[in-house]
View (tube, rainbow over the protein chains, first blue to last red):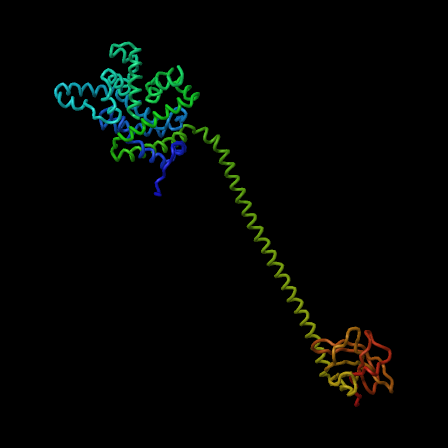
Length: 179
Length: 272
């Protein structure tokens, strides 16, 4: 037995709510890689992703009091914090201004731009490549870009009902993929 | 929709991934609370998602961890400062009586401890004082005793050395109770007072006392009773104007009118 403490989920949550730094270190060591991967998939920029990961863990520390275990596992809660923080960044004015500059440059260096957008098959994106294109684009827009179903219906110019059906169908495929 | 259809609908996955709309969220939370198999399906998907993302994890730069820790450390300090700054009036109001209460409890405890200490010191001093008084009394007693003894000896010596004194030695009666007995009469030739020095006599049994007799014309006359003390026994007895001899018998306590001739210890004739 080493000196390093291990926790089950309930103990970990209790220790975090008690503001235990050691438990927070354990949480970081165990989950930072998984959360970093989802942040990278959404933001697709390592420097910005580093900033978001920092904010995510600071927020987890701040908001641990609001975590309710009846509504889901601790990881699910942290995953949603990570996704929301990443999407918030994508939608922030600073980021969008930066992207416009990138796009201008991208027009000049089209080769560079295309390799950047061509995401590595990590995390859930590994799953995305297995989906049919009409399913894949909806998951990308909904999960990785954070658009609402209504927004997607508008962007893709398809009925809202179809958006819902396709997304649910894609999610059932995800469940099979994860098994 | 029955639970099986609900589990196959994809709403659970939408809920877990944060893609569900507010109505779906409420519905899913209700279904999970009401149906164990829905909850089990949700948890199974959560675990699968967590496991998959853990396998696909990306390693963040090393320095991120310490940056996060320094940020939460600074936030804790800031939070404390904010609490102190935001409630400049409330803190004294709530805190001051508490502080006073805490301080008074501490002071009271301190005072109790000090009093206990002082009490023990006081008791110790009293004990010391009693000891001193006692030993002082003992010293005074022994001083008195020594003084008395010294006076007695002085008197005895003064009387004995006086040239007026006629000395009558009384050796033991050979057939008497104690053959080693000896006593001496110092008889003042001018005042006719009789002093007795006990050279050696056995300690009398309880209820018995020695008595000196003067033999005047063949008749014993009581010359006084005396005790045998430790050290020197030199006592002034009665005044005897005339006598031919002196003798000592052991009589009952307080003396007798006539001597018990069987209990005669010593006898000596007056030579002059």
